[in-house]
Length: 367
Image (cartoon, rainbow, N blue to C red):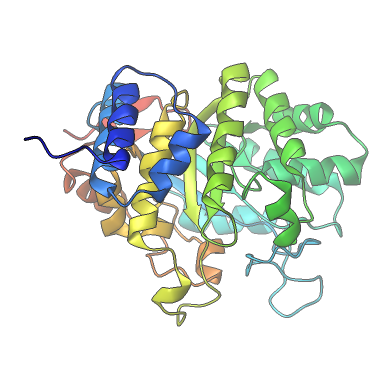
């Protein structure tokens, strides 16, 4: 006698069959996977999907995170980085001050400046343009990855220019790609609840659509682990997938867990390792048309990031040098890693470390 196949097992088998044949997963499939506690089956499917796309390669980049200003007009409930103008700890660096900071930390292997900051309405749009121009003029071989979709929408509001005009002005100054931030969760219920006063879901998507039309390839994130439902996470992924069908402009998807307000916050205030790995795996399965899913060690910690490489992740981010946003909210991970540490982390997962540029062109294979 064969034991009766229970309905969840049958459902999981049907999804595995879809993955095997490269069929697209539905909203219901994604929600089912989130509700399942069969983490290893989900991981196995994601690993299969990732191996098909990327083999055993895991990519990383020598990059540096830069923060021109932490002054911000928005008060998103999850952010601990922002300050008001004049508040203690608030700062806005001039391009020359930023160049002095970069000169102290730069070395010739660096390929990317990753810029994030606040929506600072106390400086004009020109300030943001000149910041990029200064970096690109002084470091012409380094890709400038700057300004989230929400920041582009903010620039459009303070300058009176369209998204296309804002982006073209920044591209002319040296912008190479947009980071994925500002997406948070792409549903209005979430954005209203979390006091996300910046760009709406549609505006964020429209900025990236416009960037793709102008020839920029960009990044996409999801900030999970607060008040969103599992269905909202899947809907978020499906909106990115639909835009990718249209433009093919996203290079990588980065799921980021919300960090609690400070490092003393206990385990109850953090996403579980279980949820983190499941989210990596489900991202890989849902986003069949995006090449890479990133295991962001700043958020996950280095050991969980290692595990993520067998749960569908194919990117380890980069060296960073000094991360501030997640750490201002209590991240427990290192502020940055050296190239050797990243290579060790990837090899420890029995994967092949590949140093890349921003656009996933291979620089060096560390076999």
